[in-house]
Image 1: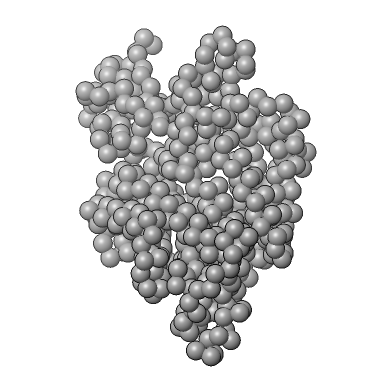
Image 2 (image 1 turned 180 degrees about the vertical axis):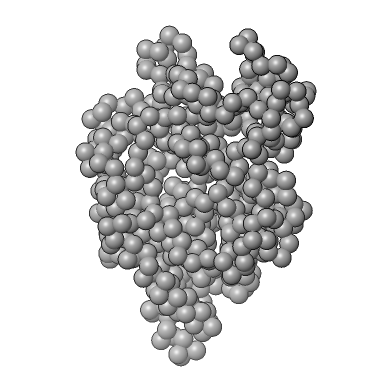
Length: 484
């Protein structure tokens, strides 16, 4: 016990108990959303009859290259059970279960959440290729070593979380400054609110802010991402002030668009730098057991070694964003919007029940849940829930290369009226029987002006660019061909 009393002053830090409570419960909430997304979408996207079946992936990719429980078993029943098990476990932790059990059991709970979600990410292929997947795994791994109500928060874990937050913010700031010149000219937000992957219900209003305000937004973003993160490593109260500024800027992003749980998870990590002792005092907790001290120190050494590659990436002129350097997604690089598109294009999918295609054929449009479609439909708020198909549709509109492997199977599913796939959509125009043909058109979208909005009630204006995929039908149907 005397030896442990010597360890306590540097290993544990009182005054952060409330911050840890908020951080852990919010992490559990993010896990809950992520597993619910898997439970409701994985089967359609990556199931046995999904667009890109994970079963084929695990047959060709060895376990060591992509560790996952699904190398052992990858049928729909097992993946579904894992997703719902994640939902239940995350909900239990959110309700306080991890604080009601011994420290070792709490760590097991967090480790199971991390292992389950790693299993989905590592077989998720293009539908799980987003930076916030790795961010959740890295943050979730660190949370395993954050302790519970039995101990004060370990100072080493809190500093590693600040290091993670620093890389998220500073990496995003650098990729912008080094990338598109509109960031340096302070003009990127002339376009971004309109062309971002999935606008939210307030994006139209953000887009129509005065250009002077857009320049202020960009300048503030540079300060928040290139200067403020250094304050996370300063003594209190500077670290808390830096965390508060990051939280405020992230809430601004939450209001202006849909970026899954990226912004929310960044907010969660900021609490690792918030000293709550002015509110709660510094109550003494039980001394951390020696085994916990050893485990946290070993984990810190591992993260320190793995930090070499992302740190080098931050200093590189050829900086990469959203890359993992190991199969466990520990200590990754982050960043977004190194370039900003000036023109929004959207793929609109239509179907018809007519057997013969003529100039008079009536086509009916499929409506997606989140991505722009009908011009009179206000963009919805879905974040932190992640609409994976909608996001891939945005990438597909940028280049046909992003459709490889999944787009034609998707069209085939629509021709079959596959119920699992149709649950990914907002509206199916053929509820009674499948369409005879489907096609995809490429449109140029822009937000309506204030005048157009008053006159027409539309949020969007769209102009046909070209045919993206000509009319197709299932093999064996008259006049049709199967998507290839």
